[in-house]
Image 1 (cartoon, rainbow, N blue to C red):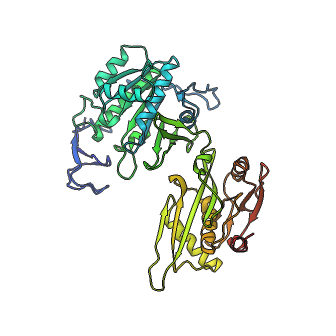
Image 2: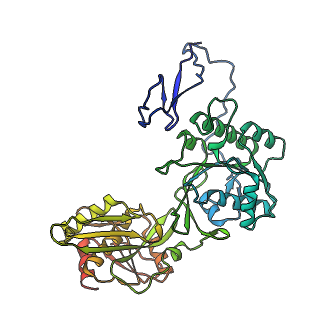
Image 3: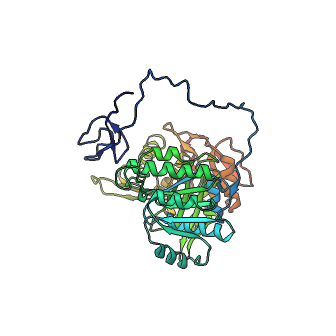
Length: 454
């Protein structure tokens, strides 16, 4: 057996180095490399042919039963999961502090307990009395939920092994867990990896669904080693702005369903309330048509969501530097779209400040929003309101072409369902649902329609 080598692991990004350094070569953080216990390294000449057991192979067409789902009592939560919790699965949920992760999981666990399933909620951040008080404010004080406050993984697994396997185990949070088998403080890379491995192994052996709450860094990624996201079956992100009441639960990884599915919640006095029709939430408060307002049918997974895009242009005196401010969209894409409108459509934005906002605090990454943003910008510049009963979608190229986007028929159906009679988008789209579709091939065609007040 070869001599074990020393290894130093960065507590910020998880990278491994053979020697200590003051600065991590990968993430450039200082004083984050700590030594871990060396792993046993076997020589390449070691005979590995015996001592193991044979692996059983099955054909690709072997019949497979779909995993059973367990409903949480929150339809939006089940939708983001792909239909409910899968027995023996491990779910990792991240989100900003105070966004409502603990509240959501407490509601889901209490609902399952009230429905007759055994649910366990273990908090490493709060005392049991604190969780009990929060459950009372949410109206869940009488739910038969098993509650504990602990941080030792050994104690947690010993307790769970002595009882009937529950349907759901919530660990809040994985960064507070500690294993006495590993040196280091809770939250370090080695501790998070070891604790998550033990809890995931318990989920696979017992058939209980384990939900791990994860802290996030300042840039929004889940804190700890990236291998944690590879170990679990489902990775979810709970997003939203504190100044707005809505919250979005988004599936980033799902081994049992589709990704990019979302569940929409609204924060109220009695906890998180489900929003069955998100379009009505993001379009609420729209009054008479005003210049610079366009409605865009976004698509989150398989769910269409109508959002309002608002634009404002302000003319400046000659010589002043114009400002571009964007909320909810990519600022680089706005600069590209302004250049296309100037070069291909003859519009002058160089002497005007441009402000763009996605109403409701919603964040857009869909390239199909190009046409809606362009329509809002042209409407604001010309001071002409867009048709109130129209929606806009399509990708705009640097040549000024309006290109097709995915799931155009679904967008049109959602628009017609909410009373929008017209859709402006790429040509060749079959507008189902009764909405009249205006096909566009070039962006100048759209500009002529808006300026001509069509």
